[in-house]
Length: 275
Image 1 (cartoon, rainbow, N blue to C red):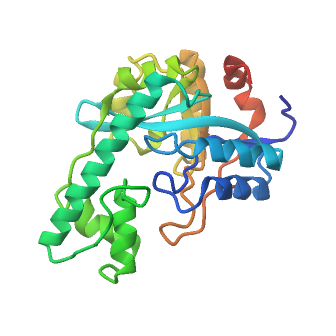
Image 2 (tube, rainbow, N blue to C red):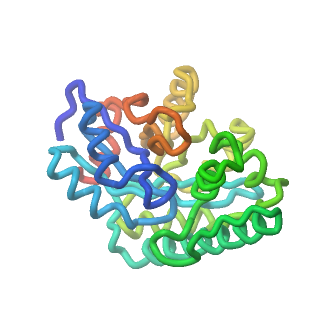
Image 3 (cartoon, rainbow, N blue to C red):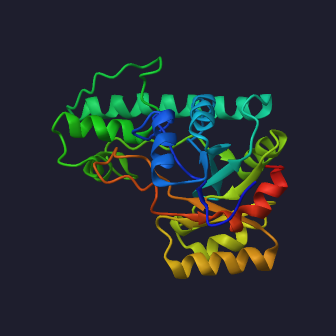
């Protein structure tokens, strides 16, 4: 484990969930940006990890297997980032399969609601090409010319209160943390800066036995990063984070390289994982 002036990005997504790029291309982008360490943390799926690890080994890039699990805190949706996991562990695989199946069913129901609005998307309901995220539907709406931007698809059709909104299947925070730990990983509060009413939610969140918190995120200001680092130090929590890069799927420049977590700050996490 070499630190020096290197940096890592421990929160990225591929087309296996709602990103634009194949796992191999996420790795290539990270290597081209000069990263020393990468984690792929697709939503509720482990499907891209083997491909990403193989590509990282070929590129000479340190790699951590990860996942971002969709959980609930009261009425809020909370994401749990698992890092350093064993993708073959049956408990984690079972939870990921349940959440992913829920995503597929949610997308199927959203497609039905869009059809009732006079917008047939004609997407496969099963197989690798079946949509598993709102992002896939928003991209298709844009490609058909129904919306001017991908974001407009969310705003007009796919958000709460809009015509094609369907709630997501969520697990409990305890289930997420138990599955991550059973698979040898650590569980972190994902991108807390995106949590509505953060200061009210964090104390409740941290009653759960999280191992750490994502201090760095593309949405976090330097002041927010400092605030979260101080909170982690006070509570003895690990810290991590990353760009949350989804590639160019929304037509924006990719975020990878915009958030550079110093390897020195990731040393405690890597030591915990034996990496």
